[in-house]
Image (cartoon, rainbow, N blue to C red; front, side, top):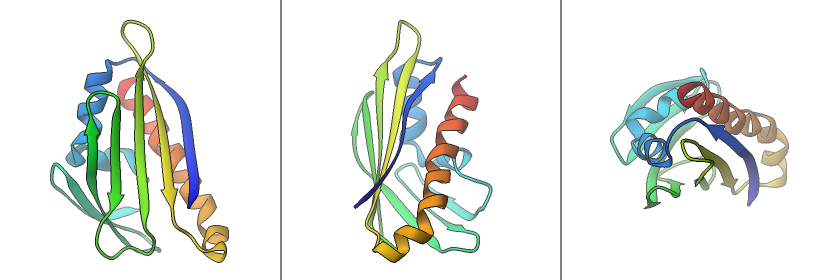
Length: 133
């Protein structure tokens, strides 16, 4: 597995609020890059197309409110992956989020996909900051 991380995302929101936002896939599109099309989502799953790449599907695997959310690939995807959000308190009215994206890539696919996947994890962190200040 290849790991992409965005650690120490500081947000000015309660852990519970951030967890509830992340736990509902209907909110998730707002965290993804602009290249995402064909978005479909329910509360616990979503599917979409990354323009110029492929179709992806994922579902919620486990939740431990308000500190951890785990998402896994579902169905036909170009690679198996796991996306974890770790949430911890930061002061009285804030929280810290860490995003960890583990994906099963061949060495060749890793060379091609590393830059876009780093961008994905960075974009998610930036958009969380925009949403929760």
